[in-house]
View: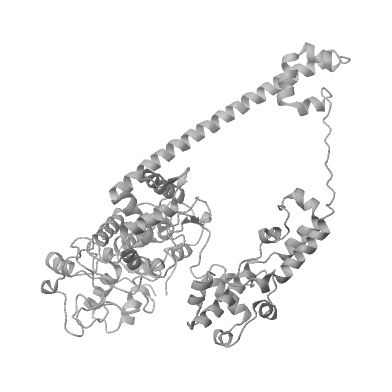
Length: 581
């Protein structure tokens, strides 16, 4: 049921949403957290440290004033949405309309491995109490990877320094810094910490804070990549017309040091370092977490001001290039129009001559209308052939007969594929078209000409080529054997790390085959025969999943279907009249 809140604490500078909600809980005198969440969101307690918490639109509707304005203020002033927004632009705009809840769900709820903590600066607590009369939690301290205060350079706390009790528990609200810890500790000036000596951590915190406060608009992946590329090449990381990605990654790691990057980036800390600093695009944006955007932006530009200036400069350049392309297109259109006018003129002249002299030969027409015939011969020869003024060209079709080696090579492919899976020791490699061609000892390629010359061979190659899903299943079983031999626990996350197979694909295959990790660990597995018993042939197309699971854990949707400049536009254009229970 909708209702207006009698009051809600006004937002203090850089205050996080969980801080405002926690202050409301204390000031309202509610006995339970459930009651507070029901009043504000109409839901049971959930995690408020998310980038964009669920139910924020319900809270905006229950605040005084227009829901659209309230929602915009909450998003831009009390969440980390502004620091993610520049890196979430669609590859290309579309007029496809979609539900706003799907857009909100596409925004990262949290950074993997970095959530569930509330960071506090003791110096900020004392300063806020003096300036605003009340301390609060700053959202710039909650940015992933930030470990020191951008203003005071003091280390941030996430738990009590005396009893180590965390400030925040799952699906709970904050008591700190308004209420003392269970051990009676309270953040005061006397408990202030010494400044951090980690200059890299401080520079990271300043850059992240400035980026959050900048409220940048979404940057298209093409524009963002161009900015990174030009700056990297200016710093000497160039290779041909592109960038030396590996050298750039090594330079970034050397600049910050492995210890700092491990604390900042969970993937690097987990030894997942292949293509760690990638600048590829996946559906909507550069396939790079926010922490790496900050690390790379700080390394390349040193300040948000220079980063912003480069964005504006690149946008102007892009507009000029777009305008130039439009002018070229218009020029080509004018040339086409002129060419059409010339075609009609020359055709008319030749037809008039043929009507006046119906018995004239082609040679005589060439002599009488040489200019028109020359233009038509160069630009409109089909028309000349249509009216009998040029002989029609005779096309010859080359016939290709099968090679005498075709049957022998096809049998060779069968023999190689028959023993491949049992001979593929160590980490499995997929049986691809390339590997099947290599076994022939003859240079072939899967082009149309070769397929005509060796139809039986390529028919067997197509048949024996291993499907991606069969290859993933082999990798999973191999990883289980490896974990078992090293005495490690067999879990989906460990299998993912060893096999390189995506977490969701592992779950799909295990669920489909109804495998039990404990049962698999107790037996010695012959992978090829075990897969056949599980109903997985070498060309298995994969599990048939219901549509509700096709989007994966983060409900990815193709952002080529997402319209304009900003996800914020979709969120704010949601149906405000829709009732909330």
